[in-house]
Image 1: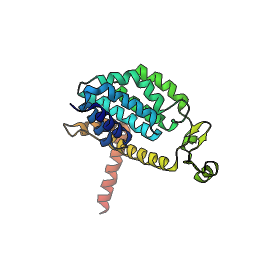
Image 2: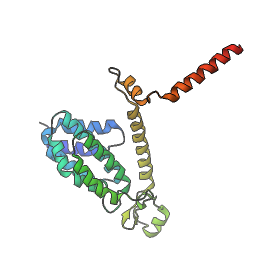
Image 3: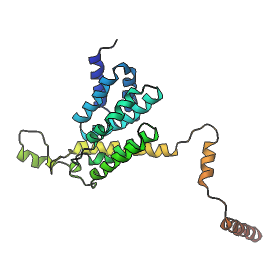
Image 4: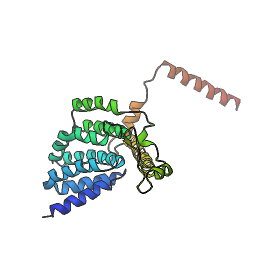
Length: 239
C-alpha cells in the first residue's frame, strides 16, 4: 500500500504544476483515480491548493476539476463527483473571489460549470444560482489585478521586499504572471476551436453535419441555377 503522505505530496505537486495542456490535467486526474481509496484526502488537497495558489493556477485547477469529475463518472467512482458537488460553491469562491481579485477567472468558471452541467454532473439549478453570483464579479476587462506592477515604483516603497502591489485592496499580478495567463488562454482557445470542428470518423456524421448546415432549396436557388446555365450556354456559343 502506498504511503498516504507521499501520495498527498505528489498529488499536491501535480496540482501546483498544472498548465493549459489537457495532458497535465488528465495526468493529475489519473493519479487521483489511481489512489481513489484516499479520495477524501485528495479532495482536501484540491481545496487547499485553490486557497494557496495564484489566480492563474486556480484557473488551471478549475479546468482539472472538470477532467477529474468526467473521468470519475466514466469509471463509476462517484465519490469525487459527490464531494465536488457539495463543495462547488467553495471552489467558485476560491477561483473567482467576490473581492474582484479573480475577475479574469470568471469566464473560466462559467466554461467549466457549463461543461459539468452538460455532463450531468451539476444540475441546471445550481449552475443558474452560481451564475447569478458571477454576474457581480464579472468586472471590466481592464481590472486592477491585470495591471502590470511597476517594479521601480515598488522598490522605492519596499526596497528590501519583493515587488507586490494592491489597488483598491486587490493584489495585482506581476508581468510574468500576466504573460503566462495570456499564453495559457491562447492555448485553450486553440484547442476549443479544434474541438468545434472535430467530427467522429464513424458512420456518416460528417456528411450529416454538412447536410444539416445547408439550407433548404428555395425558388431563388432555381432562378440562380437557370441564370448560371444560360451563362454557360452563351459562353459555349461564343467559342
